[in-house]
Image (cartoon, rainbow, N blue to C red; front, side, top):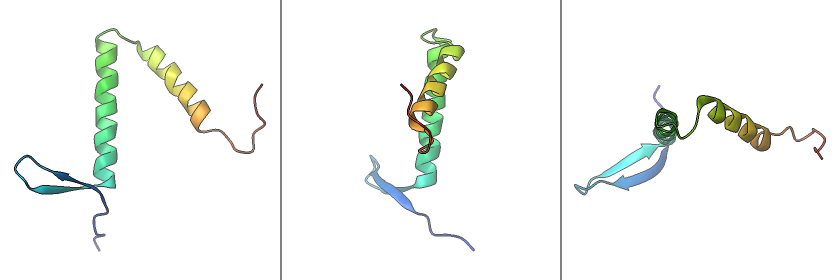
Length: 73
């Protein structure tokens, strides 16, 4: 039926209550914050959409390498 919520962290709210945050909620929150930040940077002209995409491609290449691929020189 329903799986028990897997708690990633607990946050003490200003009113003293404790809120449990799941891994899914934490991932969604991080994703939304990242999207908002990128949109704001592009809107303010700090970066362009193209610069962002180039940076994302560079990050993917450096972080998601095939462990069996030969090293680049």
